Length: 296
Length: 320
Image 1 (cartoon, rainbow over the protein chains, first blue to last red):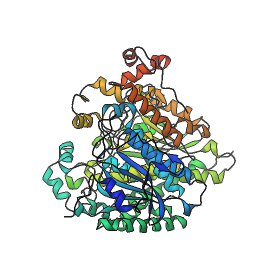
Image 2: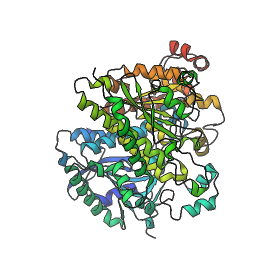
Image 3: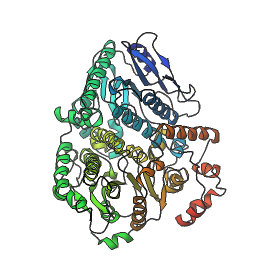
Image 4: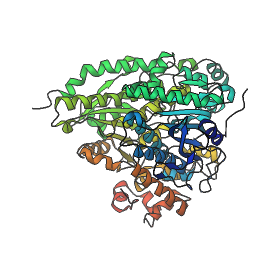
């Protein structure tokens, strides 16, 4: 086993980016309010000289205004802070050509979105949704987005912070990285399914089983990184790959849709493709009826 | 299935996914894609000894609202709580993709007047989010749906319809938030973390999931309407939802963005102001927010009919 990176988001920032290059809360001319969302660390840094926006979880921080935020939980303020950071990034590069759009690097170590009464009263669904839409917009505008899972990437929090990236990388399971929706014991309790049966399924079914290796087979993780020292080079390499694909107009190979294609290649999600093909056929058979003869 | 006229009279709360799909669009106009006849069921449930459905709990297809081709996604709460797996997820994603494809097609055929025939997507939510039996596939499908919603921005409207028994929670809670327009009934419930999960994570003192009134005033249609988290509140019938959808079709497309709550820098700034006001107010209950927005007798509001509610309620004022 390697020493885990869980709870060490700020250290990861130091490991990944160039020495003395980190400017917290600064994105071009924009300044993110330092007070809000202490569970999220955002700013600008350089990776081998290239300027990027980074967004990470700070598992050591608590939010004095929202007590659900601790150990990396993404709360209302955190999610909006992350979304603002993305929109600022889009703004500062909005007049630049595609290949000059600065990359976003997401450093992922989060156990969940804030579960609480105030969160629901105000609408935590909007907060996490807004960050995802921001990332999707940035990705489609040409910013390369690389997510680096260093610790926990759990369920809705992974959807929020990670699954809208172009490419997702993860430290090897030897680092205690966790990618899943829910622990098996909780799944057994909620579904009332036999835990032994679930454990058997989790030995080899990538659609169900927890862990980095299964997400890799599913296309959910692009590449597994074996050493912390290699994170920097891996991120740099994937920024270049993503940038090249975007230059060639191959947005379809990136992001959530690209992960669907990668999953097919790796034998993960196999029903998905059948559904899509059948819908295409059935759509083509009737669509003219719905849109033809339209101008009388 | 009931004939179309009978479908209109159904309570929306009780209508199943197929009844909603057929009933929300014009009479006789709905064509189902990947219907039960195609037997596209989940391959992951049988290995767990679980029952399957030949539509995997999601009805998808195409209908009309007037001259507009309308792509419908309708979730069935009676099948594993409407949870999203690999097959159902793919059906959702592909439906939005087909709507976008149709947009390009319509624009090409009738460039001058395409807005009259602009496709729309309607999602009738009844779900708790990811299907745990095939959790990883469900999770990845959620990300794909969000990606498609962003693709549809500025092209076609995506409308959320929430009024079914299970409500709309988990990952689908933020999918709904990411749509352009949300229509709810007072029976509709919308949120991220479901009541049971809050209770389990934070304790019964924080949230008593068995307290129905508490659940409804925190996540129900009336609260969401006051908070501007849903755009329209309608009576609990298929007809009422359909009437509202037809009116939405008359909104000029450039206006649609104004109905959004998230999805731009300005909107995020507005939401952040709302979070800051929550810090100041420190609501112990959803009705503290109702009061804050000028509703002096919130309990009375909770008890009255939607019609009376709409006539008297005061809502959060939008900045944008």
